[in-house]
Image (tube, rainbow over all chains, first blue to last red; front, side):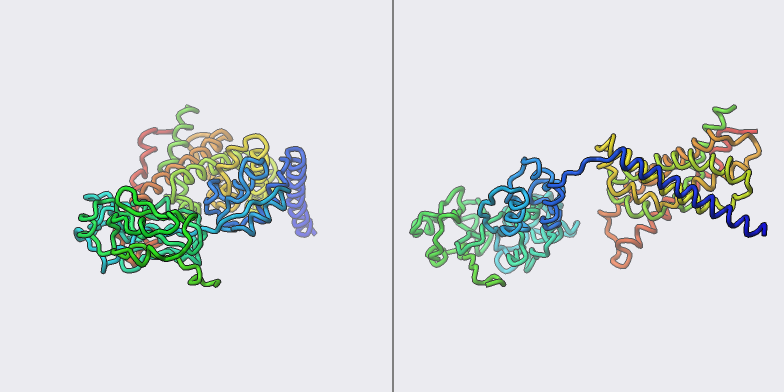
Length: 273
Length: 207
């Protein structure tokens, strides 16, 4: 009898303290309830949840909060793209603007075949650290170092170093621009996904210098500029720049470029087409 | 005399009886959250607060409820219950009154519920009350011990965050990369704390 009594008392004490704590907690949660931002929660539901920070806010919840307060634009989420912008607009009751899909491009074609290394590098496997030593490891001081800093930061497995130069797989790229910020040479940039010419060289050296460094370097010869029917190409600082918005996709420049550094972004090569 | 014993208890909790490096409690957050210095700091501060609060509540429960009624065998289950409830309460209060701190502690606060270092501090201190014969081990000693344990946790975390920072730039054999080398490093740091053994007794002779 006493043993049963002891068990009962022990169970009673534990249950009693448990109940007491539960009571205190439930009272506290009612008394100290924090009003929740329901709109922000609803927006968070439709966001992709990648927390990549492409929108410029600290993850999806930060963006959702800014949206519900009206501090942020609707179409900043490049990951969700247009569908996501529409969903957000529907939740917030505002109009969505048309959003252009973008992709990252590495503006360098300096593969092992086309260019060379200045010296043998045995340090850390990081472009950032290699770029700090003697102006960088590649012969071209504007080219891709190829140690894969961008590959490591990409959350979508969309950029890979292949033959000493990083290449973006536009099928996977969500244009979060993390690689753009990471590249110590700043040769990765975003461009709209459309049929357009793109100069895959960032070298600002004079033509003669560039030619010695790389087989496919832009020498700033302006042949593309002269031949472009829509005046979409401009040579500045010895490197051609294509204005994608004005490019009509005629491929004229691709044909005339003596260095073959101007390439064509062909949307029909994307997986979905 | 009281001050002297308090200082001794405080130093002992940090150096000779460091809960992570000497008693091997709370290894999970020690390995999990020590990658970055600021998250290591956030976790340690949260752990310190909860350790002190948990001791403040569990000590009287044990002394005035469990011992007089001969139910001290219930301490483990009751302490878990009390600590879990306490963490929840702290979370609710922080969320309401100090949202900035709540945000910076983030996920670490609920994680502490299952941190065995907290349970260890509250339970081991009761053994000390019985085994310390040189002076009276009072409620204040228990609180200072909990605070020291938290600071010791912080010291271990911050030190180890530094060690891991060095590890990141080290050329480690492939088979040891990641967790293995982290455990080796943790063992070495723990070994270095062994050097403090007897340190406090010599520094502040008691009784």
